[in-house]
Image (cartoon, rainbow, N blue to C red; front, side, top):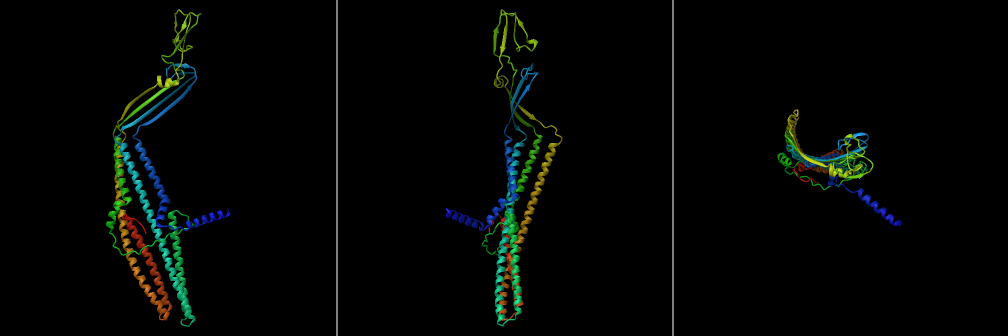
Length: 485
């Protein structure tokens, strides 16, 4: 049993360790950022709200149904709600009704409202896609910054290793009396410079990793490591013109589609406002009934009994009589006659004796509404013009952004080409300087200066390379291409 628990613990530990060491790919980072981004979550709630509004506007075309039920109790002299007669006793009454109405015509406001709400829903979905694109570009930029700084650290470590090897050789030459002891101090200083470059690159890497963690909504102390992709060195390919990129982006970018949809929504808003000047036709149905504890029907069950010994009989009305008009004495061969009447049940009163129903058409014609309809139309027309200007501004902004992106890509291409030539030249120059230094043809100052120049050139080349790669990815984004490293 002990071995069983031991191996289970080992498996759990190995699984946890493997999970902690799992590398984050670019695709995983993008998915994580999209899933956890707060702005996207808020926008998604707006989508659901707009969808709910659309469903409610569609349901507005259906008839409604409302019910009402009331119950009352009275003691003393009160009016019977059924017979409208005064009674002096405890009385209860109840009423119920069902009513329904449906709009038959209201200037097409219902159908136009549905169209407008559907467009608003589409606009919110497009805005969600716009935010997703922004998050994706931010993640790609942060991801490339990590790759850039890791490569800078690698280059700096190679330079440090070369300096250490050169220092070791110099110390041996000094021991052999072939070089002056002063040469070692310059190399020690160069080693410290190389170490400082590594420290600076590590600090910049930590900042880049923190930035990416923040985009992914990960805590700062969580272990994190990205997968370094095999990125091919960019070539001097001919870049698309800004006009070509913009013509493609105008048909694919959600920010443009969103602006156009909002224009259509505003135009439908004008038709909705105009409906306020048109008549509204509706149909109404009503079903109602009532019941009372003192209800006596006009025709009901009667039971007649006779008693010998009296000279007359009382006929009609409530028993005992409460209204003098109900007392009638009649001559009859019988000595006395009493009439007893039974009340109907509540359900008999509800569904047989007091049930009533009906329907009617209602036509509401607007004649004068203190200028509200005209103002609504004017406001909706102003909104149309506003959305058109906003759409034009969106297009101008996109065009200017693309123009800047194309210029940045060309500049990055030129900078990378120049830095690559410079780094290659300094690599060869430093190799020659190292050989001459070993032969004593140049002093250590000349050699260390050549190494520092090479280090700067290599760093500049790496930075310009990833800047060029990112600028190319931005152009791919606007061209509607899949973004991958």
